[in-house]
Length: 268
Image (cartoon, rainbow, N blue to C red):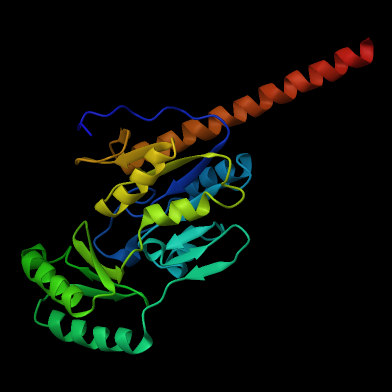
């Protein structure tokens, strides 16, 4: 889509909300373990979930363990590792794993290959690996060459580029498939999906949401399939506040109308 995209509208009821984490709900930091969601934003997410029967989920490349820690004390449906892990609204976990021996061998190979690339970092997720180079962007070419070599060696893997990271994950796994799985289950089914993300990994989610006649929102600059754009994480936070305030006002108006009808009925 064209780079000039409108700000997403303030939405009313009957939507299901899906949020990426890093670069969307939380500012990107030099190290992944420094990332956090501000307390006020967690409060907004809690309000949004309460007003939409729990139809709010986090969809991220991070593991579900990390997502739970960052979103604590809240407990959302989750899609971690781009959907290789998923926890539905009923707390049932769905996982797609790589063979255990392959994971062990790959970790040894990646540790050895990254050792001379100072400033890079390996994140082992159990069923996927992230090769970070935010602190060593001059190693980008070497990181991509390494990832491509691993993808060729292990045909059940797919390479997924991101912002200063390349991930190796089970083939066929993506955020779009995770959103689609949620949309077949309560409380998401019967609603229109809304998905916010900032990275190349989120484009699969935008594609699915567009097909389902939902609302796709790119955070930050860059070409995208999304229909709308928010310029920054701060803009996401403001949009969240606008939505929750709007929906709360709608609920209050509906309650007032209902009370008025009941009062009129009693008087008649």
